[in-house]
Structure formats: structure tokens, C-alpha cells
Amino acid sequence: MIHTSKKGEWLEMNIPMEWQEYSLETLMREFWQAPKKLIHLFRTDKKVRINGKNPDWTLPLMKGDRLQLHLFIEEDFLIVPEYQNADILYEDDHLIIFNKPAGIDTHPNEAGQTGTLANAAAFHMQSNGEVTRPRHIHRLDRDTTGAVLFAKHALIGAILDKMLEERLIKRTYLALTDGMIRQKKGTINKPIGRDRHHPTRRRVSDTGQKAITHFKVVSRMKEEYLTLIECSLDTGRTHQIRVHFSDFGHPLAGDSLYGGSDTFQRQALHAVKLEFVHPFTQEGITCHAPFIDNPPIFTHIDASQI
Image 1 (cartoon, rainbow, N blue to C red):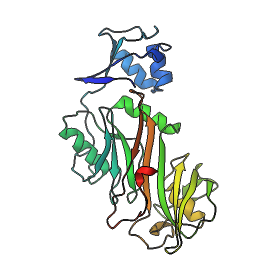
Image 2 (image 1 turned 90 degrees about the vertical axis):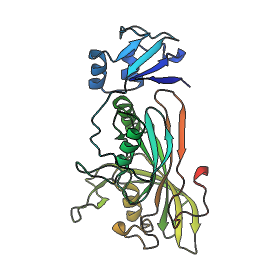
Image 3 (image 1 turned 45 degrees about the vertical axis):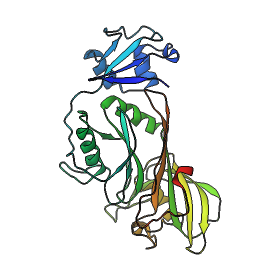
Image 4 (image 1 turned 30 degrees about the horizontal axis):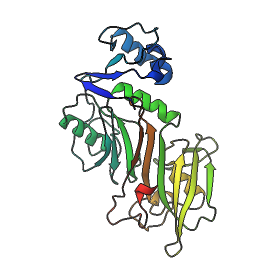
């Protein structure tokens, strides 16, 4: 683990031994995979120092040297800060993970919109005197609950976006489907596109975007005629799990949009676990999101054991 500290607008960390193979240029471009435009901005605006001095970006990094990054710069929030009752699962100077309740969007879909998780993130950061703006890294549907990751500044946001694209951020979901799924596990590899007959619905379509969902059966609830499944995604298409299991003949219970039963008030889908390696500290982060529905949807299962 690499120790980091926030010093005003700057982040400071000591160069570990394993970074000696990099120069500043290759650390930013190859290790963190930051976008070229952002790297150029850090170079031209002198937002990086080593031991308090402007560095040569081409020289090898030296173990124990003090790397300083100008990250915590005041920004226009672009999002209206608004208190929301959302639990925080993990937080540090760079990122924050919420346990999203049902009934709120992840982020505004138009300027000035309130009532979203991003509004809550902005309120929380502003209340703590943080001057950068929150950036959602992924999203959950309005009536899906569970772990959602936000970045607190531009560099970590760009790094996490790339990590998500390369599947270095693992998201695990629990869902209850209608009916009995007989197979123990499987992979649904079917492209998903828009449904031209409905403004928000998606469907399996040969002309859609690639979509891959892996699942395994956790338990079969014969009396309720439901199957509890655990899912992970190789892609992040809108409504992906809901569309795939509807097409599979086992729509999510409560999912009226995709033909599910009216067993629950919402689709029975919960983002139960989020796992990744922190880009700066190199610490493994694993967050389990407790179930928060009242009345409960997922019973007789411990979210922390997934």
C-alpha cells in the first residue's frame, strides 16, 4: 500500500520501488492510462512536482522521492447540491461509494435537475469543504439499489473510467428472477439495442451493442417460484441484466417494463459488491452494499458474504 496525503490543493505520495521502472510520462500514460489531453494539461500547467520542483518528465522515478499532484482545484459543481438519504460505503480524498436507494436516478439528465445521487454527492462534498465536483463512474437504473462509484476530481475520474472500460472494476449483482432456472450457471451473450416501439425500453437485437452477462444460481425458492442469481457483467449496457433475463424467459421479479411479475414494487436487482485496486494507494478496495429495502426483497442472504 502506498501512503498518500492531501496538502491543500496538492496530493503527496512517496514513490514506491515498483514505480522506478516508470518516468512521469509513462506513469501517467501507461500505468494510470490517463488521457493524452489531461497529461498535456498537467505538463503545461505545471501540475506535477517532484520534491517540490518542476520535474523532467522523461527521467526514471526514484524510490522515496516525493511526488506531488495538483488535484484539488475549485470547480463549478454543475450539479445542484441537495441532501439525500444515501449511505456511504467507502470514501477517501479521491472517490466515494454510495449505497443507492431505490427511486432516485444516479445523475441528472438535464441542467438543474435535483433528487439524484449525484446531487447527494455534491451536497456531501460541499458540506465537507471539498471544492472539486463529483463525477459518476457508472450508473444504476432508478429502481435498482446498491453500490455506485463517484470520482472526486478529474484525474481519478479519467483513471477510473479507463479501469471500468478494461473491466478492472468488478461489479457483482444479485437478482431474483421469475421461475426456476434449471442450469447452475451460464453466460448470456446477446447484443442489446433500443426498442423503437418504446422510449425507454431496450431489447435483444442483432444490430445492437455487444452485451455479455455471466450468472450463477445461488438458490431456488420453489414456494415463491423465484430464482436467486448472482451476476457479473463484461459490458455495461442500459438495462442489461433486465433485458437479458427477460429474453431468457426469466424476467426479474417486479420488473414491469420487461414482463416481470408484480411480486415486488420494483425490479429485484441489487448491486451487492464493488471491487477494484485503488489507482493511487494500490490498496484492494472491496465494498459490500447491505440491502436497504423496506419491506425487504432479498431475505435469508447476507450481502457481506457474496
